[in-house]
Image 1 (cartoon, one colour):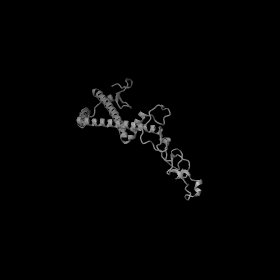
Image 2: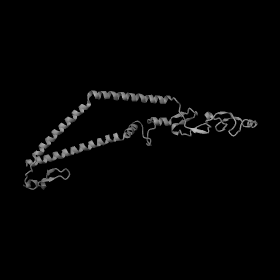
Image 3: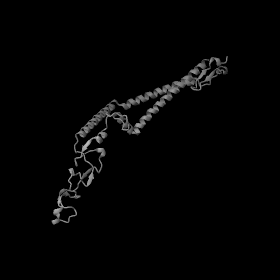
Image 4: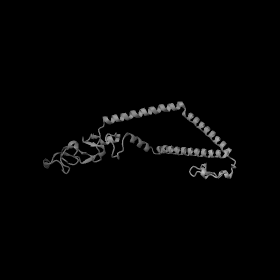
Length: 251
């Protein structure tokens, strides 16, 4: 009877230990998978940071006052072209947006005129030498050719944004440098090695304790069949337990 009780307790302990080990393996696998995804796909980390700073563009319920990224601010900001003087949005800027004349606007004969003659009095007037168009247009916007709009060479808003980002990165690099120096001074590699050795020693001691318990039950148990009749195996946990008193057989 004593051996039966001890065996029953050992089975319960083993099942508990097995469940704890499986739970640890599952948690370790999930954490490792998350770290592997971050290392292999850094864009997921960038997307997470963007989500914290601004809302997704496809969200219909987003807040109208939500923070925009620098790219979104750049696309929605009206800019005056330094070539033609027209205001434009960077998102709508194409190679056909800015009209211009490659020639000069001056008094001249059309391109088909053979040269100065008495006939030139009727058609000699101010015109663009590249296409004979007589309308000057503001900043040459009646031009015969096209190009991209060009922003001003100096923009105080963008300069302030760039300076802010530069200051942020300088502070971050300085902080990382200080942390690196602290790691070198503290010799974290040696400390981590000591912790790993201590963990291995603890695992070794734990395994040895389990082996001592297992050696106690190395020989097969010599139990009376009449006693075993009153025990049953739980189909869910696999534990050996006594039957209900109504189902037990008198010994």
